[in-house]
Image: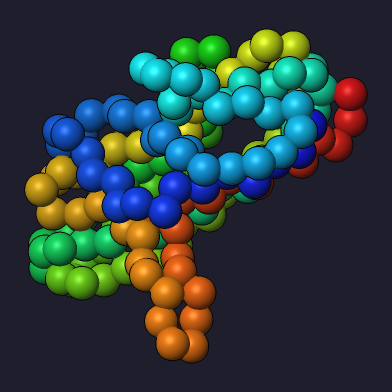
Length: 150
């Protein structure tokens, strides 16, 4: 299975320093299925094997105080040990992409979730940006999935 999933809407957290799963609302691929309500954050693998995943989030701050963002994978509801990435923004209106790649061994029917948290949920988001006259739109999050062996 291979796939490319993304969300082209802003994503906000409902609470500070609280783990929340990211919904990938749009995508395509073979052997990969996005869960249905209330589990839209789950990405199911139809075929077991070894997969290379590349996750990118467009982090955005709406305040001049430092905002820290955390990202990590969960497989079948369990956090992947030593899997977290964190990044901080220090200026109002600051934005940058955070990217992480990882290799996962999964079985038929396993699911992955991309988790995130922010230090102050009122002062930052995962931001989607509209297209401009000279550049295409920027999704808030993307996930590329490539099966490398099975």
